[in-house]
Amino acid sequence: MNLTKEQEDIINSTGNIKINAVAGSGKTTTIIEYARTRPKESKILYLAFNKSVKLEAIKKFEDQGLDNVKVETAHSLAYKNIVFKNRYRVRVQGYKTNEIAEILNLKGAGDGSVEYVIANHINQFVTCFCNSDEQKVEDISYLDVISDKKTKSFVMSCYDYIKEQSNIFLKLMDGGKIEVTHDFYLKKFHLSNPKLNYDYILFDEAQDASPAMLDVFLKQRATKVIVGDTHQQIYGWRFAVNSLQQADFKVFHLSTSFRFSQDIADLAMEILKFKNYDERPTIPIVGKGNYSGYKTKAVIARTNLGLLLKAIEYVVEKSNIRNIYFEGNINSYTYADEGASLYDVLNLYNGKRHLIKDKLIKAMKNINDLEKYIKNTADVQLKMMLDIVKEYGNEIPGIIKQIKDRHVENNEKEKAEMIFSTVHRCKGMEYDAIQLVNDFIPEEKLTKSKKQEGLNSAKLNEEINLLYVAVTRTKNSIHIPEPLMPKGFPKSPQIHVMNVTGNEVEEPHTDDPVVSGKEGEKKEKAYSVEEVRTRHQDAYKPWTSELDNELTRMHCEGINTRDMAKHFGRTKGAIRSRVKKLQLEEVAGAQ
Image: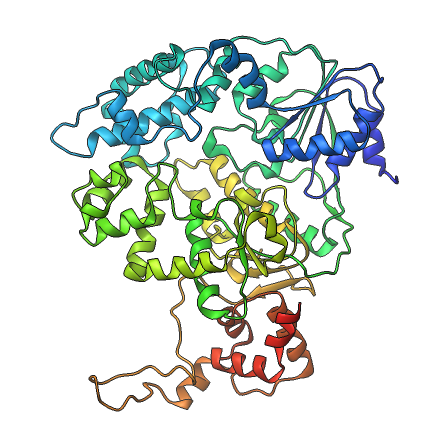
């Protein structure tokens, strides 16, 4: 195995160290080699980020014959030490807002939604405490984690009550009166001041560790290795902290990515320069990837809403794409964490309250009540659902059915012609070609936010990290909306800038006439050829072999007709006509 000088330095190191590893830099390979070179009698603990990473790591260590390495997640360690000993019952999915309101017997003051708003904040308060490194609920500054001014104003008006009820809820779990959450038993593990009997502890994906788990890790007597990427912290909303910045260990770097080329590496670095008002990239990224395949193609979005809207476009526009796959459970894109479904919101919107299943949504008298609840809780998932309902209304059931009909099962993911994922769900994964949805925050808006009073630089940095993580999922090429491109950054054979904006109005084209007149009258086009020429400057330019090659590549990568039309400055009808002439449908079907 050929190791880089950076990898060799890490493997030969002694004492506590931290490794800042860029995307695709072979950190797992490095960790395995580090473990292999420790004394065979050493007891080594590898802490994985989640269960899927844990299972993958177990296999990799076993394949290398490293049976002295124990692989755990923070929660699996806590489960064995806390849940078993106390015979707790675990609440797998956590508590819904309406369930907390019922358990604590919360009462609204003449407003049917107030108790649910308070219950929502109790849930967040408890989660905040359980993930913190504080010893008591009273030490939590819950107001500091709320950025929305209206939401903060509401919480301030009943802060003592929220804190009091949060304490009661925690005591009910502690006493076994109700089921415990995953966050709770991890917190109790932290408060027990555990001693882990290992010679070495390797803490992976540490940039997204909770303060509670980081505190447990740092207090151990073992030689400690903490690994992560400063710029891949994207779980601040779950109260995670960037552990690499907080651990005072000797620093090592893995700066060479074997996933993507230097073009993609340069783009990633330019995106990180958006942090010029706070945290600058510390090392250059060297891109040594040279993969040229197009087997796995993915659409990546910042939000569920952005992803679902793009999936709807593909279902409507790309009839040749028969198999799609959503990372994670596809139903999670139509359900909020609280349990409310898109259909519940649609039924409330239509005034069909008798069809609503979720108790929280059913407690709302109308859409105005739901909007008020969203404003007082800053519930982004419910806001996303409401936005979709307002946009598509009663078309939603049919659209979702089409999406689900094309969705393949988990064990058939390799059959998918297009994979859809949010950044959070595809973290740690890689694809041959990716297309970004235009729902990330562009540089211009970030710059404007920087100048505003009360700037939360940590949240802005996390927004930049989301774009960085998304860009670095590709092994080959990327299609990126123009607003997300760093100013002045050049195009390349692997970086394709899409001339689209998320708010553009769909323009008519020659084979989809806009109609006017009363029913039964002759339908005529509401625009002229001259108008089409004006809107689509390149609409009637001849197709060259270079353009045909570019169209072929984009079609094979799964880019939809609308985006290709805007990219080439032509109508959708012109694109479909050229695709048909080049027989690209047959090419795509044979892949």
